Image (tube, rainbow, N blue to C red):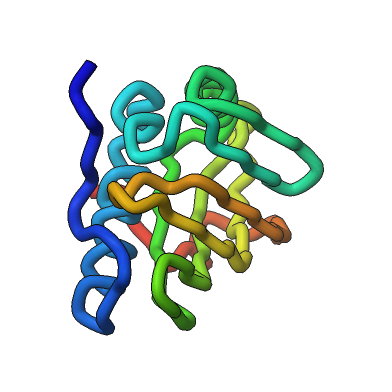
Length: 141
C-alpha cells in the first residue's frame, strides 16, 4: 500500500496554510464526496453540527447525503489562524433546499493534519440563516 500525501504538509507557513485552505475550498466546491473524502485520513474524526463522523467511509456517506439536500452549494473559506499542524478556518456557504428555500451557513472549523497533510480531525460549528435568492452573495459558477 502506498503512503497517501496531500501537499502542502505541516508544519505550515502562512503561505502554505493559505494554500491548504484554498485547496479545501476548491475541493468542497466540486461537491464530489469521493474526491473530498480523500483529503482526510482513513480514521478521520469529525463533528459537524450535531453529527459525529468517524472514518473516511462515513465522511463520504455524510457528504453524499449533504449534497443531495443542499443544492447549488457554493462555499468560501478564510484562514483564521494556524500553528504547526493545526488551523482555524472561518467559512460561509450558500445553498437551497429541495423546496427552493435559500440559506447561508456561517461557521468556524478547527482542523488537525497528520504528517502527510491529510486532515485527521475536523470540528465544525455551523449556523444556518434563511435568505431570499436576491440576497445571495455567492453565485454558482
